[in-house]
Each structure stands twice: as structure tokens, then as C-alpha cells.
Length: 57
Image: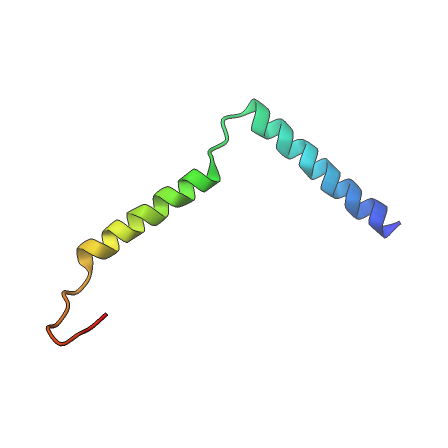
């Protein structure tokens, strides 16, 4: 009975997720994450300590 109970919960969650995605304005998580990464890179480049003369990358 354990596999039936766990698969029922998974199926119910999948159906609810599909319903919410189709009927509500859910943000695109991948696009949101990429925007956050780009902003973090921009901030890092602007506030990074300047390199010393002897430092090599």
C-alpha cells in the first residue's frame, strides 16, 4: 500500500501544479534566477577590489 499512497500524493501534487500554472500568473523561475545571477555578477564587477600589479589570474 505504500507505493500506491506515495504515487497518489505525487499525482495529486502534479495535477494541482498544472492547474495553478494554467490558471494563474506564475513567474518563470528560470528567467528570474538568470536575472538574479546577472545582477550579482554586475555588482561583483563594480565593487571588486582592484588588482595589484604583481597579481596574475
